[in-house]
Figure 1 (tube, one colour):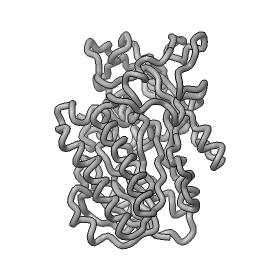
Figure 2 (cartoon, one colour):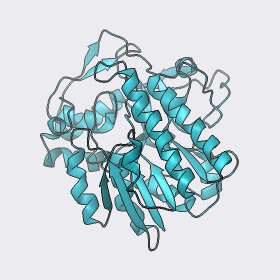
Figure 3 (cartoon, rainbow, N blue to C red):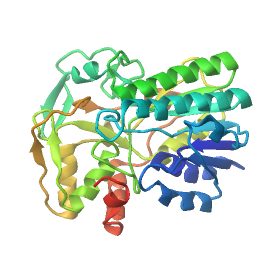
Figure 4 (cartoon, one colour):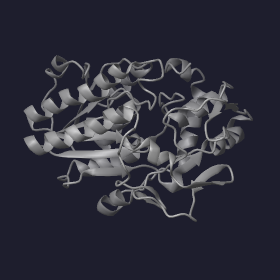
Length: 355
């Protein structure tokens, strides 16, 4: 089996390239990356060392896909992954659309021409900002929790957001490009007869992630805390009560290794995340960092952050029911892995352009 991974020098793509050969017999991995993101060059050598055939190219340029060999599957892990992309002053809305949507369209043409299956690494930020903000939550110590005294909205279970949660707009520029990419992938697959899987992910986390305050928050928070850089709680009372779930890319690889052996169903959307067991608030994460690195108090931020939500946890019941999939890596083990990386790489935030 031959697999092409886009964004192979990003955190998710790189970890998948390294993990999948141990999960799939006789697999050959190719990878393409434009190396634009600060720090991504550092991931090329580890990927090549594991046998990845590397191509330097940009998915926005159709001609850069021409040299790629025919493969059985493409794993699309290339994107500008920030929820604030297009509005943060670092990139324009047009750039985000070109990276996240135009690049996908070029990749779909590659799949159409070669009959290649596609696995899209998508995001929970395709979901409605207004519906996320309206989730019934209550304060539970140092975090928000679902308010069990109120009826849960459609698409929400006690274990988190299900695949039926509303995708009505607005969802953010970033979320819109990912949702549009999902729609086009399904349409291309149905029209031109190639298989498509859509994996909507919670927050991927682990050592070596290029974390910023807008993306890769677990890596960023630990590195910034240990370096005593300024940290802020933003929005929702500025106390760090917002909750997210985390999971490791090695666990994502376990699911993908099964998907490439099957034909996708008519509804190919699956939630992949840490679930309630691997969820934590920023305040709780700070307490963990205080114990690991010594005290460092974040400041309350006065501004609100666009597109933020009080509580996002993924209900992965469908993946568990159909694949027997569930995270094998606990949140404490993920945080400890990042902490060791923090201690070995004190200048990491500078390398990945976060400062």
